[in-house]
Image (cartoon, rainbow, N blue to C red; front, top):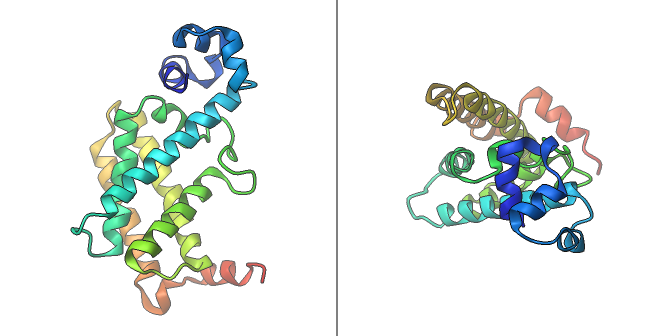
Length: 201
């Protein structure tokens, strides 16, 4: 049913998706749909969670490569996989990580991109030894938001992604993260320091 859902959202969008259409595409009785999902939001949430797991698995496989020697290689891989999923994974370019449906689809407490930033922080600290502090998660969340917006722009301009926009997106994120993570005083900007200081103890 999730595969059928992914196909349908690319064809009719989230607003056009119905449980009846899903049952027809999946070739199951409508009662079978409601046996597992109370409504279309729950179906899309399950699809989005599966997509996030797939994304993180792709990253783990890339991070296992000995060719990655610097944390930037991990960030680069994260951007590349995000772009690849836009091009190859049914439903992803329509739903992304659920923000089309609900900004808190993945977690009631964090917005969807915040969840992705947390997961990136986890894999970067595990693979490259970065210190997992609130400031790292803060700058990664800024980077994820910026990359997400620019990649969406690239795919609005061209169906397979405007390569010029994608290259600029990667350059912008690289420069920002180098300044914030590798810069003096760990690149902590005034805004970043204030945000970190504001974190509850």
